[in-house]
Length: 235
Image (cartoon, rainbow, N blue to C red; front, side, top):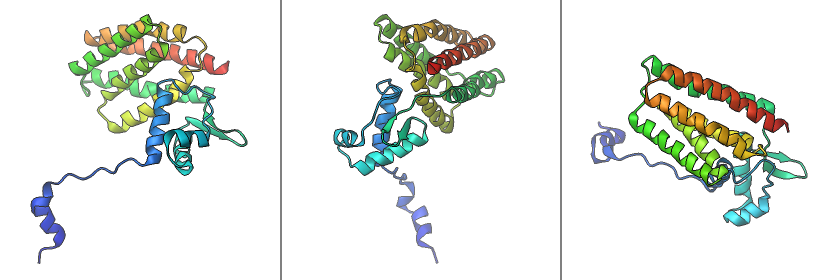
């Protein structure tokens, strides 16, 4: 006797793709707040009143609370008694942890590529070049928040070369958290401007196949960036 599950596996229903569950309202609310942090629109210390968010997003206060719980677990928000929920300030320990992971993910691209275990497709190299050009154009307009977003995107594209959704997801959240460190800088032009030319240099080294040189430049870049962000969060 053929079981019903076997009939489906052999019949016309076998080719149907699985349906992906839709995001819940709380997930959409968390995504929106996360995006605002990533783009530099919610700076550290920004209060997020539950009632105001509920009204603005047209969702229940329970939904907002659920979104808050998710983002608190991601180290993006903090809840303090009698003060409510605010966007977190990074600590020195946060910055050190973030840069440890950045070195693992970003320098690992060059280690694997040099050993022939990872490819650097021309299409991705070109996309990185476009991001660099976009950041330079934004700097020319003194739009430093946009420059900061482009910088995060630049490094995310490097990490996407691992071709791992798990790594991509982890790194995206890491870069969102790092944006809080960028926003602690009192002079974003000085901070972001100092790394624009270095992003261009690393990209040009990659396109010329100079992977050892690109890795060395990126390692130095990350050391300097970590020191800059640490100085900002100490202020």
